[in-house]
Image (cartoon, rainbow, N blue to C red; front, side, top):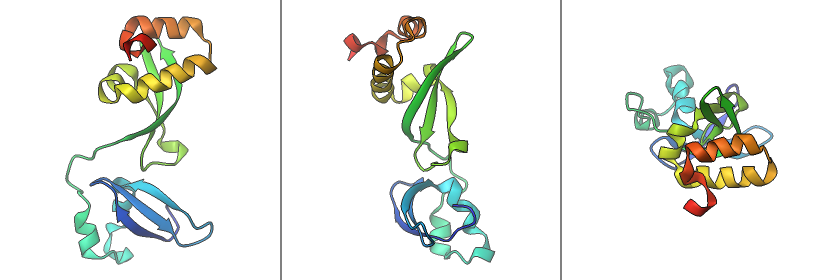
Length: 140
């Protein structure tokens, strides 16, 4: 979004907005309010009503869009996490499974089961299921 012209189409949640890019290639995508808040500067002539709706001082919330990989770093299992409203690859993070399993257990379970079918890393998955039995198919 940086360096291009975009229009806010709608407010999807207090922290996710759909924007439409006005220059080719024209498309719509969801962006987190943290990406939009930098345009709140008076030099960008953002309407005050829009600028004020951004919760600059509030605790931002993040929503998992999807997962794409799994790894183990020492004793810590991590899942590669793509966040809603952050479509750039630079915004993808490795998050501890121990945290993610508490926040979005169903989404994580679905990913792990699909991952197990595509990537038969028996040792990694066996260790993951020992540590987090709620991710097993039987736990569904």
